[in-house]
Length: 258
Image 1: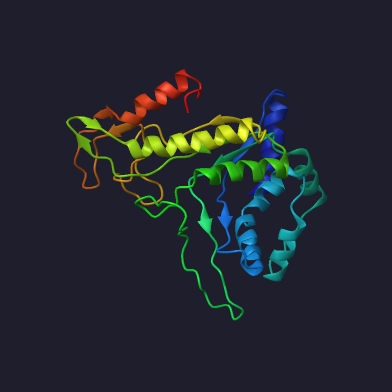
Image 2: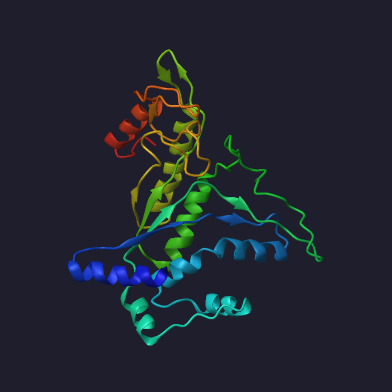
């Protein structure tokens, strides 16, 4: 998959030398349960498990540590000289980042018994679907990724799934406004205070749709309410939520009033 990606990157730039190519990665910051070095080490490995794909597409070669991990499982990848050249020539120009939540890594005692089950963080609120609401996690992830690769970053997905209820023809989704306000504020800090080169933000998603993770309509993300429900009822009419007007104002003022 990563080999195909770097080959496509090279081809896109050959079509037009002004083209800039990125790839989207879903990344989740993972914290240790406590400061026990064993738990810190495990959390580091849990968080880094998806970064090998970015390593492969940004560093110019498929990471050696991942090849050795595959070897440990009896998986032997054949990497030709042509493949090595493709990775070197097909490095990305920027990174797309999907961020929704952070996790807490499971901890283990010396015998390997699981002591911390699940991903709940006692310092954070949870969504109705159990996802930790962690605005600082976005700032942390932006800093971690940017300092690792020094490539521009675009937030390609971010948002909260919630049950929205219409009252007198209106949807008062203050919880969504709070989520976006706090996350955008942390992104702004990453840009202005931490000097992260983040050049774009895309919220998931502007209009309600079937949730990809749970396959239901009641887990709504949009600024625009769609009158459709899990039982098939609804006339598909559209209604602006309070968050629609709030976000419109944020765009008009270019984030000055975050």
